[in-house]
Image (cartoon, rainbow, N blue to C red; front, top):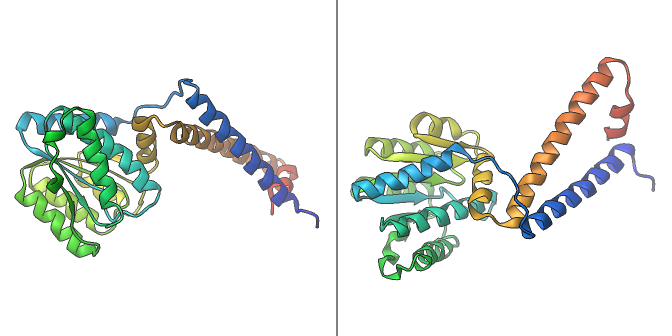
Length: 255
């Protein structure tokens, strides 16, 4: 059976994209420096942890209504970074979870961060808390933590829904410095309006790759950027060709 031109072109692009990912991942594993622009929100993350240190208060970290998806895995890396710096500065970090399957992973991340800094005695298991898998019950629990505990920094990274504004408004009311990030477009306006710093969309994934330095994440991020540049080039060239009456590129890419 003959492949249509559009499907053949998609197959070619898919194979080429896989090769580019493999190239960047291999380069990262061999120690080649992959230049990634530092996201401004990461500087804010250090600022938030520093403020908690100066005030002698705690850090709160929430991943929203997390499940095993891309935003969650990026949030794991940010949590690892925040927990390591909290351990280094002897700052308590409270992590609230909404999914039972995620809870033991966050426990291990925080425990590993304190062990890595040589301060296992400073790790408090009660500070990593599973609240509820019900959205409103979880939101109520987080509000309670923000109001009862001495929280100086409220960090929110992951998939958020209606609870995003509840968390952000409560944190602002309590005087917390707030840094947030999500790829949920509908929730970004709330974070941008209320929080001090916000990672917008794909900046969340870039932050996870930047902080973890994992070759697979770095390579995938670089390959995605290359794919976006190629798509932009094809769109620009295609529009110019169609405007001039040339339909060659359109026929090749059309399904």
